[in-house]
Length: 484
Image (cartoon, rainbow, N blue to C red; front, side, top):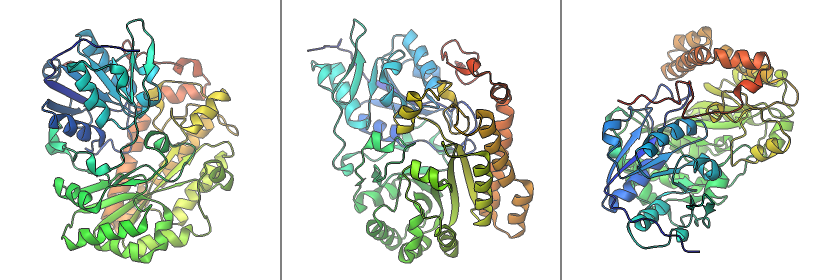
C-alpha cells in the first residue's frame, strides 16, 4: 500500500515537553528529560530551525510557537493529557503535530485522536525520516516506527524501528535549544539504553529493548564536557550494569579532571564492589537512586526483582562508608501487600538509615506487564492518565481498599519526612540530607493541598467520578491552556 502526503515546506519546528498535572519529586527542580534535546539536535543537523519548550522550566510562548511549521510533543502517561490539550490548540491552527515518548508509543490509537503522527520508541531516526517524507515523494508507509491515520480514519502502525545498534551515532543532546536553558539546575546524561532486567511494573525493556546498549567512553566524556553543570544526573536505568565498564569510565573521568558532582540509578549489589565504590567516591558521586521496590518477599517475587534482603543493611552501610547518600525507591500496593507491609517498609527505611525515599504507589503504566495483567482482571478503576504518576492509586488492590493503600503511603511519607527527622540531620550538620528531606516535607504538603478532592472521592468510593478525562474541555487546571 502506497500512502502519500502533501508536500510541505518545513523550516521552523517547535518541540514541547508538557508539564505534569501535579507535584512530584522533581517539582522543585529544573531538569529536562533527555529525549527532546537529542531529537532537537538531530533535526537541527538537517538544517531546521528548532526551539524546545519544557513547561516545568519556562512557559510556552504561544505567539512564537503558533508560527511553527511542525510541532513535536513528547509525553509520559502522567503528562499526556496536558500534551493532548496543547496539541488541540495547534491542530485548530492547522499545524502538523507529531507525538512521541512512552505513552504515545504504547497507546498510538488514542494519541492519534489529537495528533497527525506518532513516533514509537526511539525517536531521533524516525522523526528525521518523517521530515524527509513530508518534504519529498517517499511513501510514508516505509517509515519504520511511525503510526498515523489514513484519510479514511484507519490507524496504520508501520513496522517497528530497529533499535540503534551504535548509540554513538545519536547526536549529542543540545540543551541550548531549550527556552530558559539558563534556568536548568540538574542536567541529565545517558551512557546507555535498555536494561538487562525485566521488572513487571516497568516499561523500559518494552521501549528500549531487553538488550543493554552502551555508548563508548570517548562519547560519554564528550557528553560530560557538553554541559556546564554543578550536578549531573546519570539517567541510565542501571548505570553499573556492566561494572568493569563503569570503573573504566570513572577512571577516565578522574584522569581528565572532571570534578562535576553526579548521581545515578544503580542496583543495591553495586555496594558489593569496593573498588567501584572507591572510584565513585573519588569522582564526586554524591548520591545514588536505588530501586528496592519492596521488602515483602512475595512482592519481590511478583515484581521479578532479584533482591537479597539479608544483605541490604550491610550494603547500605557500604555506600555510606564512602560518603554516598542513598535515595531509596519503593513500589507499594502489589497483590500480596497490606497496610502492615507499608508500615514495615517505613520501619525498614529508618532502621537502615536510608537518606531520602520515594514511597510510590504501584501504577499500571501502559506498556508494562502489570498494565495488561490489571486490565485482564478488571482492577483498574480510572484511565485519567493525569493520576498515573505513582502518587495516586488508580486500581483496586487485593488485600486493602484503594483508600487504605493511599492513606498508608501518605502516612509513611509524612512520618519519614517529619520535622523531627529533618532537624536530627541538621544537628549532625548533614546539609545534603537535610535539604533532601526538607524538599520531601515541602512536596508532601503541596501534594496534600492539591489532592483534597481526589482523596475524598476514593475515601467514599466514588470511583465513577474519576473514570475518564477530556483534555480539551476539562475544568482541571493542568489540562486548560493559558495562551500568552
